Image (cartoon, rainbow, N blue to C red):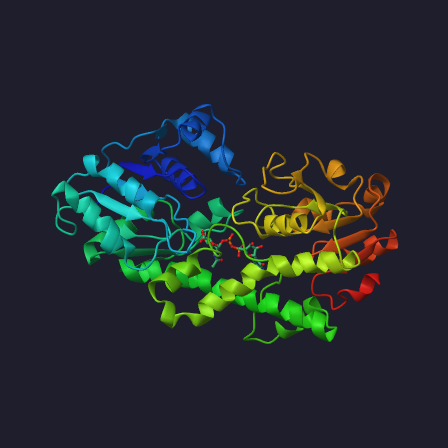
Length: 431
Ligand code: SAJ
């Protein structure tokens, strides 16, 4: 099957890199988003999201004429749906964006087209939600047009590299669909391309993120045990990981972002009686911000009321600007609810808006009159912060490192009391 023009619906963290990469490999690409401000931002040559290298490639793709952005889809050889799948209050998948993007394709669907769903979705969404909507055209899936599910599996922060180099799963509603999908992604994918069924591909995506969630949950639980038994968890994990069949991940503030903290629920939703482990792991990770807030509380003598706390990092993980489902924000909100006066700073999104607590535009503003500084995200530039500099701009002498970002000895040498999550010293180190 030959593809010369494609339409990518959804210009977020996945759709925009995908559209630009196809355009840079010679395809004519119409990038579609329903948000007018996103289209106008891109048309001005600016970007509405932060991802290393993305601005460059988007600018080049637009300048080449191969990438156009628009509010509406148009006829094309293939359509790729890369819209968000958030969850409702009750943790069930909100497929409204998948539905509306699929419906937007309907007027433009022609015989011989390929439709690919990339959005993370509960098992059987492609066959039970997308296909019936597309068949409203009167055309028949498998006979008149082809349908695939191909999950994105790229890591925020490394999207452009992983988009090309990662193995790519293409799940077809039939073998011809899978073959066509493989042909399309061969345009730029250098990793292995594996063809399977649509529902297997949906499961693969959910299983990968669920596996990681469970692994992080056990690391978080180990960090709590470490405090109980006076063990430094970082040392213990490092030693355990020398075993050839053990690979424990890192404890932290909790699991955030729009993927790992959401996707496992899609399995729980479809089969609650079969997924007690998955559900418990989610609950462990969701309760980690409260554990970190308690660490802060204990370090300040049992109460944070009226205490001034400078918080560094609000994004859901290191070196990204994405603050969706961020456990760092949960910590800030918990501390604010407990009466603390929190001033936060997120270097990748200094203008971030949060419901509780204040966001400052600079590191200095966030820490100047603080009694304690709390590192909640392991951003690379935080590693380079000089304790000598902080000692001159802040009155705080207690520092909490929840993400293993500081050289504790160096900070201690400059007169700081440093408490690390999982260092087995909670809360005795400040007593
Ligand atoms: N985290 C820990 N400890 C760790 C690793 C991560 O606490 O050892 C936390 C992070 O701080 C963050 C959360 O987990 O809050 C998730 O971060 P992440 O880097 O593990 O993953 P995401 O959500 O950025 O991207 C994941 C990736 N999935 C897997 O690695 C299996 C990525 O490949 C997927 O494409 C992405 O989800 C997605 O879009 O589904």
